[in-house]
Structure formats: structure tokens, C-alpha cells
Image (cartoon, rainbow, N blue to C red):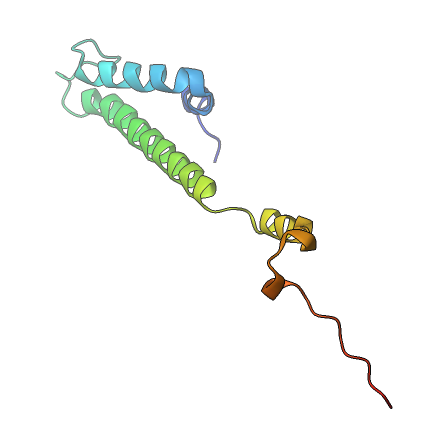
Length: 109
């Protein structure tokens, strides 16, 4: 199903970090404003636009929170490749004597 024109613009603006908060603020302002595309006096049609904006706003807030949660999680957990590179780059000379690998004993056979 193709996303309507307004939905495409709304979601593309939400992907840009600079405009994200502006769009969310404008959505909240639209919800509390008495000026609507279709007035709330009309029983069902008046509520559809508010419901659409509220749904888009809730979805965008959820997405922002999930993105931020993932970013925090990525900062706390080092990538496995970074750990392996750090271990491989460790100089054996800087290790304590007990941690240095011992040379295998020559067999007298």
C-alpha cells in the first residue's frame, strides 16, 4: 500500500534530527489548537484528522525513544571486533610474568 503524500513528508521530516522536534511540537500544537483541517464540530470527520495526527505523533515518539535506547545500548557494549583487536594488539612484554606464555620444554627423546 502506498503511503499518502502527507505521511511521506511527515516521516521524512521526522528522520532528520533537526526538524524532528519541530514537527513533534507542531503536531502537539495542532492537536490542542481549535483550528483544524476538519472542525471537531462535525461528529466523525472532525475527529479523524486529530486521530491521524495523534497516531503519527505517537509512532514518531516511540521511534525516537527506540533509537535513543539503541544508541545508549551501543555505547555501553563494545563491539566484539574492537575487543579482539585490543587483545591482539596487547604487547606481551607489558604482561606480568605470570601471564606470559611459557616456552614449551624440549623433549630429550
